[in-house]
Amino acid sequence: MRVELVTVGDELLLGDTINGNAAWLGRALAAAGAVVTRSVVVGDELDVIVEAVTAALHRADAAIVTGGLGPTYDDLTRDALAVAAGTELVRDPAIVERLRRRSAEIGRPLHDMALRMADIPATGTPIDNPMGSAPGLRVELSGKFGKKVVYALPGVPHEMRAIMTSGVLPELVARMSGPPPRRRTLRTACARESDLAVRLAPVEALPGVKLAYLPDPAEVKIRINAVGPDAAVQLAEAEELVRDLLGGYVYGAGEETLDRVVHRLLVERGETVAVAESLTGGSLGAELSEMPGSSASYVGGVVAYATPLKASLLGVPEDLLARSGPVHPEVAVAMAVGVRDRLGASYGLGVTGVAGPEPQDGHPVGTVHVAVAGPGTEPVVVTPGLPLPAASAGVRPLVRRMTVVHALDLLRRSILGLGARYEWEQAREDREGLG
Image 1 (tube, rainbow, N blue to C red):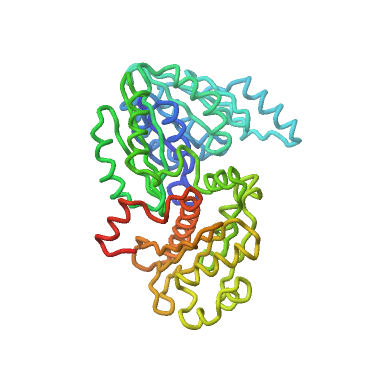
Image 2 (cartoon, rainbow, N blue to C red; image 1 turned 45 degrees about the horizontal axis):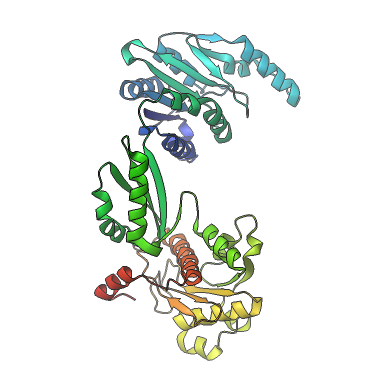
């Protein structure tokens, strides 16, 4: 099934509101086996909404519209669907009664304007909204479109998700014909997208399999798509081959984030971690403490942003700081050892560097040193070469985020005994003179 998305609202066009609904819908539809072929954003103008919906129905099997179902005069999605269907709006008594009952329950008067939410196209049917006032709408169309359907959902995210999950996705799945495509997302950290693509060339050659690369700072998600009658088997074979080719670079799958993987590995071993941060300013500790139950693996941290605190709180030798400054691999190691010993953790992570946007003490922006000190082993320090754009207002959060990912992945590698680098990545770095 081919589906197009139309999100309505001037606030989306002007950038006042991020279009998170389209992202959520894309993931939900893909998981259900639908193919999202287009997503457009339009403003609160009747003719523009009509044009977008009409065009979508000419191309796709179904259209999903979000936004424009509220009670105000700039909420025009109902009117647009009536025009697209060649019909008129009629007031639904059952919706009116529901609105009156809901208003009474919350102790607020029901204004006449709110009754606009009870107006639906004559050929449409309402879809119950368990989280709010405005119902969703289902409008079946035929004739010039063929036999198509359009669903309209409120723009309020939690209302949209509730209606989509309970009232729309089951219908779309029932309308699908043929075997659904199969998808699986694997997560990697600290590898270049281009290196991954070269390594995975044999997977790209498999029949019925397609790879998509979804990069984030210092991470790349690899989505494996398989189609056809044997899609499930093809997907399993492709995933196995990806894991074989990438080895330890694959840290998880699906929604399994790096902090959750680290937490699970530590808990399984009865071990803990503490962090010493400089340039990240507490975001590494925030990541490790994000999930419920994180106290089982995360002891705590020290944010030693000022150079003297690295000595007084973490025990970094003063002569080292005087000789080399705070941005140095040995300083990262001393921070990791110091926080591990002072907080009584199994592992210590230390990060120091230059987040920018200006160089520091002769070190360019993006100079980062990450160290891990574990039980019974020598500390390990890495200096990742961060792929950064020219210094700008956006480079600082990028450096900080990539540093967090490198630190978490170095911890993961240390727990699993994988080493700081993998063989094929180290070979590339040796060729390019990196380290």
